[in-house]
Length: 288
Image 1 (cartoon, rainbow, N blue to C red):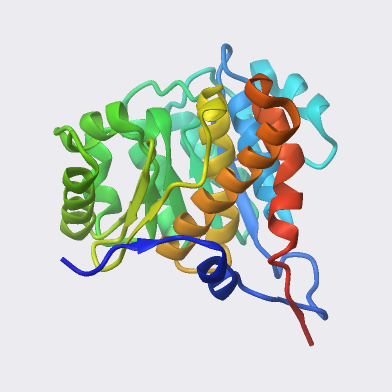
Image 2 (cartoon, one colour):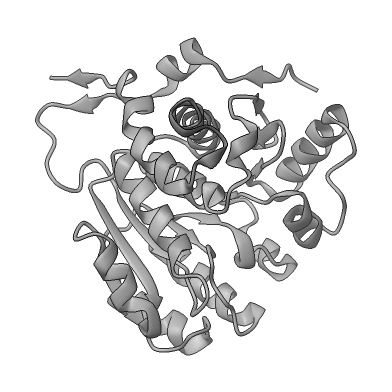
């Protein structure tokens, strides 16, 4: 196995893409976020706001019509698209594809989402692939039936240990060494990028593998994974999936540490969003 990279400040500075001073709206990424349900309206909001805070120009947030008002009220920065059903159905997936703008660089799918059946997520993924959109799958979108659809694509999956077992049919491993080997093997087998969340985050595309230890014990609060998905999707607009995922876990951790320094064990994921621009600002580079 090749050497395992540990993401740190010098490597992050090397990997972060610069922004052109002459760039216009859309040049720095357009992201679709599809998620949410009657019980979980906050998840797609955290993901969408994180994508914007990560430097994305435009974010479209597709949620069930039953929660569209709550999502729109959170921020005028969100472009909210209403879906007809509380669960993602084949019909809702087709409807969403018809509503999308011509250009969607990346899509984050699954956060807080209820899915009627695997065929619904398969249809949506197929539609996004037809557009050349890079895809991130999280939470309820991580079902084993999706693996043939995303094999050998620019897809990132972001499971925790339980979701990993559901998706791949096996535990990721008991210790760090075992987890690194397992994640690397499955990433290579399916030709995707895997971001396994945990005490040590493990990221692999089967060719390169990296780890992240930048976070703290207050980040067990709900929504931190949704923020991570948004950062990753935003960065996927600009850099390859492996680099996007590796940078995202690092920036998510930096923001979490800033929030921890402010409020200790009392942070929420809204604190994470507040500190994300501060965490990322030191890496900003503007070129002519």
